[in-house]
Length: 116
Image (cartoon, rainbow, N blue to C red; front, side):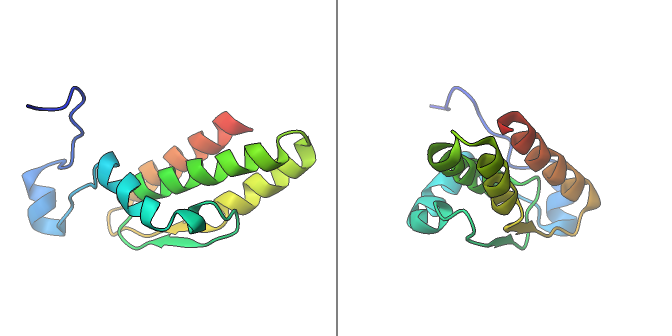
């Protein structure tokens, strides 16, 4: 039986054939990040996603880090903003497809904007 919300892991057969592009589902993203949970909870811990696609891993890492920032520094706007910048500036993504880079960057920026 299919899950209620089926995530799209393939944009097109051509992109898979030409670039090997297959997105990682949220379930797998969370399972893998849970293996390094301690690092996802360190605000300044660096993450590099060498094939970031639209940012499934980076978005989840940023959301986890920002939850920690909120918990620790939510009462001080100055500290909250400072550590939010540290959180976002410690994650990096690379992709060979420019449209993916743009989508990933916009996605991360959107996450940051909704928290500040």
